[in-house]
Image (cartoon, rainbow, N blue to C red; front, side, top):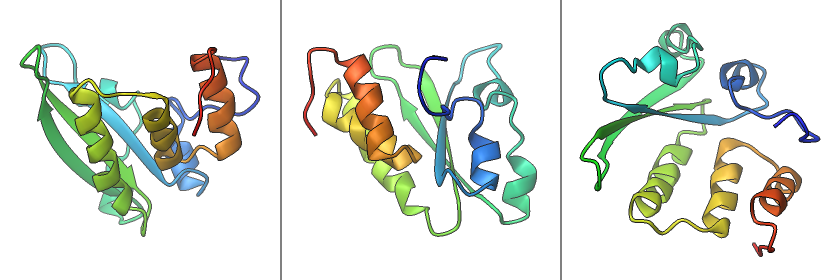
Length: 133
């Protein structure tokens, strides 16, 4: 997605969190053979920063209803931003119930640290037939 007019967070979450420009990150790790946590985190080493207290780590497991696969969700938050974990879990519950929509995607973007303008740009591309907040 090189044609976005702003830097995407993908694979840069840790760098951005340490710079203070991203409050929260989320990763999904399916418990299937050959797929390790490190791969889910795109090789980013959050552990040292969690141990030093710069970031907090929160892990929740959700069983995917149709496949029966357990999915570990790893959430990382800057101090004071831990509230985003529970908010994101509510969104994931909606997603796993098949209730995803443009407005929930907007809220997910806000939780992950994207601005309204960045969300507007992304959603206009993702939903070319229009969307309303």
